[in-house]
Amino acid sequence: MSEDLHRAIEAAKSLRMDLARLVQGDEEALNDTFTGETTLDAEIRATILAIEEDEIMVTGIKAREKELKERRSRIEARIEATRGLIEQAMTIANWPKLEMDIGTVVLGKSAPRVEIDDESLIPTQFFKRQDPVLDKAGLGKVLKERQKARAEIEKLPTADQRAAGYIKLEEEFPSIPGCHLETGTTLTIRRS
Figure (cartoon, rainbow, N blue to C red):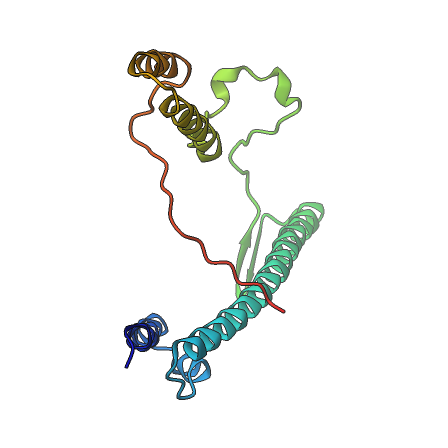
């Protein structure tokens, strides 16, 4: 058996075991993913089909979540409107309290609450400041510019020119502690 074939078989076994662990507890997903394939290309094909099924599920769940959120908002608004109608009816009837077999309704004074007339007139001390959020896109842009400038410095012919280039680099693109650029691999799946 060739070394490449042996590595492909080992990779297929590893992929199958890793996916089995990933979908542990979801026997239906495990059975749908594998139907006895043993070659790496067959395992990857089955895995891509499983990804496609999961993406379809996520799309459907997102649509249902949006629908349920909208429905919840409508029902919450209806509850508030209904409570207002009961309050209005009891006020007109001058009933401060109503005892029934399902509960007691009491009409009372509520605690004062703030209503905003013009937000732009309110002093800034009453606004909450947001927690800082890391701008990864901006950080990545600066790190990539620094990396590009550094690559240009490496092309300079003499050590003195490179040393001067590094000094200029630190002035224009100072190093940023706590982060670095990571070059990895990416997987693209194009569906036909």
